[in-house]
Image (cartoon, rainbow, N blue to C red; front, side, top):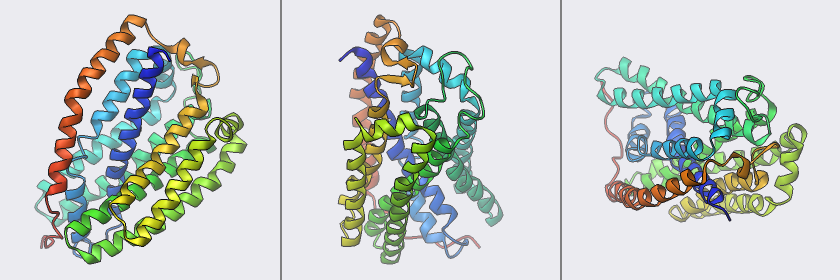
Length: 339
C-alpha cells in the first residue's frame, strides 16, 4: 500500500463522514419542508432545529477536508473533475450557502412571513443540494469525467441516467438518515407523538430507499456496464453488507431499538460509498486515470499525510465533545408558534 492509497482512504473516510453527518442535516431540511403548517409543524421544526444544531456548520469540516485532500494529493484528477463538473459543483455550493444562511436568518426572524420565506429556502436547498452532490458522484462513477481540462461534456457528464439515479438516491438516503436520528432525539425529549411520527417516516423511507436502490441497479447496468460489473465483482461483499444493514435497520426500528439503529443505518449508507470506491479502484477517474498516475509529488503526499495525522488529533476530540454536549442536553418538545 502506497502513501497515495492511504490518502485516498482518508479522502473516502472524509466523504463518508460528510455523507452521514451532512446527510442527516440535509434530510432534516427535507422533513422541515414536510412538517406542515406553522402551528401544526412547530414541534417538529423545533426538534429538527435542536438536532441539527451541532452539525449544520461543523459537517462542512469534512467537505473542506475532502476538497483540500483531493486537489493537493491528486491534482490532475481534481483539475479534470472541477473543470468538467463545475455546473453541479456551483449549484451544490449555492445550495449549501443558501440553506445555511436561511437557517440562521429564520431563527433571527420575528414575523411569520419572514420565517416562512427563510424556511422555504432552507428546505428547498436541502432537497436540491444532495441531488447535485449525488449527480456528481454518478458522473465520476460512470466514467464520464475523462482526464484533462474540461475534456468531459459539461452537461451530459452529470445529466444522465446514472447521475440522476445517484442524485435521487442521495435525497432518499438523507431523508432516511434524518428520520432515524430524529427518533432517538424525540424520545429523549419525551415527545411520544414525535417518536411515532419519526418512526413511521423512517420505516416508510427506509423501505422506499431500499427498493429504489435495488431497482436502480438496472439503470446502472444499462447505462454504466463497467461499474455494474465491478459492483457484482470486487465490491459485491460491500453491496450485500449495505442491503443487510438496511434490512437490519428496519427490523430494529420496528422493534423499538432506536439507539442501535443509528449504527446500522449509518453502516448501510457508508457501505454504498465503500462499494463505489472498491468497484473503481485502482482507477481514480475511470477508465483512464489510476490512483498512481494521478498522485502528486511524493514529498507533498508525505507532508499532507503528516499534517493530516496532527490535525486528526486536534479535530476528533473537539467534534466528539461537541456532539456529546448536544446529546446530553434535552431537546425541546416544541415551542408555541409565533402569532
